[in-house]
Length: 202
Image (cartoon, rainbow, N blue to C red):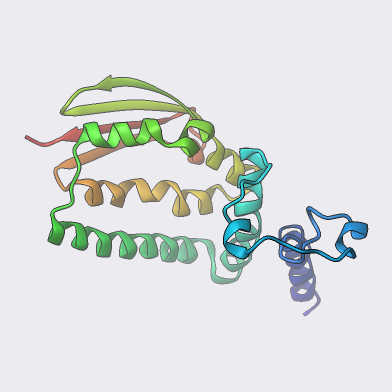
């Protein structure tokens, strides 16, 4: 009983810093919080940009989620819980793939690469190099990844793989059933890089 209470207290203290955002503590001083506020309309406030680094943004976005998932992993059991997460991802992408197939919304490798290179978040969160880029084959290496850094620093690489990296596999079917992915290395799993090799069938 004492061990269970200790575990719950530890979980609450880990989650509390992220939850403080909901209470309005993190960005306001106590003095400012007591002043009468006349905020902008909600639609304008949510459209404003935050003054925050990508690293801090990732820490805040995933921090409390990682704490909750680690707790659930420990309660349910690692193998079973990871299996549940991956099945959830599979189910989500299976439904999306069926919709794409019905509407014939498939893309080729050139469109995928263009979207990858123009994505602002990926530009800030990854360090990558394209090794091969043709109509039928695309290969690139990722040497630094903010997702891997965030989850590994929280001792949650297994959760990071199930939540983030595992998506790469069903995503291929969503993009185009004729595209196959070979991904022999993954940073989240302790390798020195993520290596992606996409091939378009004739």
